[in-house]
Image (cartoon, rainbow, N blue to C red; front, side):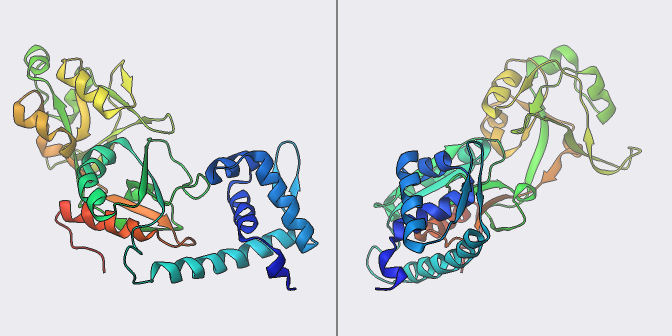
Length: 310
């Protein structure tokens, strides 16, 4: 009997997940098993192979040289298996399993929510989980099939597919606020206004990026520090505060299309609005793409009037 015959593929999957997360508990959560079951699977695998794959302490998990070498070859093997399965042209072959994606709030509102009806119709057997959070994450280590971020936030080792064109960032305020405080006409006039500060997922404060023009000393897009005592890390709450007249807000123009249409918000400094990176779907180059992911991508691109993938 060969070594392969004595080794369970499930145990190999446990090993690879632990290698990615460097943590038994995190791996167990991703796999839907208990930490004890993951530990038993590793002991069983090492006994059957007759080799130590991981060095474990109470604080850390580190691979041995043998473990590193095996993980590299297994990744290649599982990629080949995944690609073979993805190419099966059989009824329902593109509609199986679970698809987990991690997206930030604006993308969930603008891209995912409108795509869900079509996705549910085309992939009725897929269990789709959408986790909405703005913090930067490692989608592989945390068990996601894909993520959505702006292009400049996609890690370099990932495959990225544009879901939209460039996104226009604007400064907006409520008519009542503008009537009370006046409308800024130049970038330097923002210093005299209350501005709603934007907190990023890594808890850093975002500098508003706006364009200069020929009348400004500095042309091109530049980061501007603006005054304001209120900091918010959620777009919906920022929009509500701006509509209530608390201050000016820096927002995606597409995210406030309804508010601009009904007049509850108004763009100021329009000539200084700046184009930002498009939304991108991204996934690991070392993991086969889930069969339903391309369907979701094509639905979103269709909504944004972009051609489907080939």
